[in-house]
Length: 179
Length: 264
Image (cartoon, rainbow over all chains, first blue to last red; front, side, top):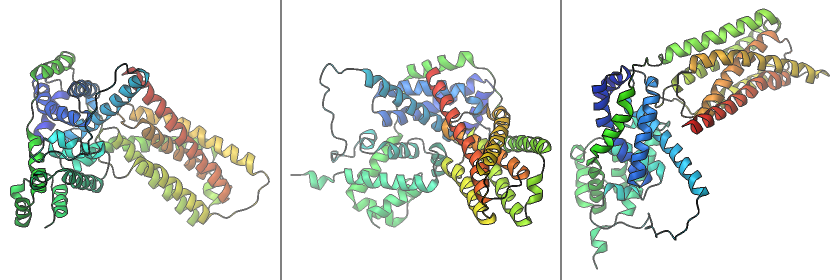
């Protein structure tokens, strides 16, 4: 992660090579984070682009020597909340003309094969989903996740524990599924 | 080891691969189908696919307008600047208003009140300096930073000051409250200068914290100036000025946040 800090300082100093590498390293993590949060790939891509624009605008607020990922994820969360508010505002003014297709219930047990990560994440509430995503996808430490979510390490641990408990409950063992 | 113990292990050491877990955990993982399925799914999170076109779009948005920027000052530097601004306002205001309150107090009253005000101002200046950077370490929530100094000051007022009936309570309290709010308004632009380069993710909370810091500067001016040592007066007028300032800060922060959201 120290490498990211060097790249971030390079970004602040307008080093285009460092910026390019930073974008290449962080974007896949952020895209995965948004995809697990909003469920739709195009929305996740839009949020990713908005996040980079916001990061670019406030890149001077990164203090060299501090961990980079909590700074980036804190901005990403902010962009996601803004995006959610915007979409809610638009949705409140829209009129549905066709009946919407039925969505599968999130809490139903998933199949017995080891389910896909995103499939599994759909069963979690957003606050637990983002914690698991930061821990497992981005490989952030508990302290870094606490910084990004403006909460304590204890609260992150508790949310992660509850999330794993819930995920385990959602999973169905193979011997139960067999007729 | 139970499934719950394994969940706890996962939560407490999120990075360690299951191969590095204790033998009991690995034995449980091998025998429990749900836990092994969950582990397999969590491990699959590392597989990522990222479209090159999207990366090119992001680079096209950012790289052409790339200019060097100087990072915001360190937390310590910003906090010291805020403290200096506070001291300048307190010194200037009391130079003009006088020190009657300082001389009217007993040693106990002065030490309790000014220690609390000093600690609160220090803690708020540090919190504001940290909040300038998103994702910085937070020792407490914004609501605690706001509620704790106010409650501590109220408790100190009740415990170290007595109560005396005063027929002119309302005009005297109003006059003190006005002075407190005016001093807060004087310090607010100085604080804004020190904090303007930061990016707050919670404009309302940030505004309320900055407002409370300005309000505590006003309350300190009043404590030094005002000789009315009545618990009702100090709570309503002196602490009341700080509460008013925090509320005004929250409103201004909310307006700023709304404007920024609309602009985006």
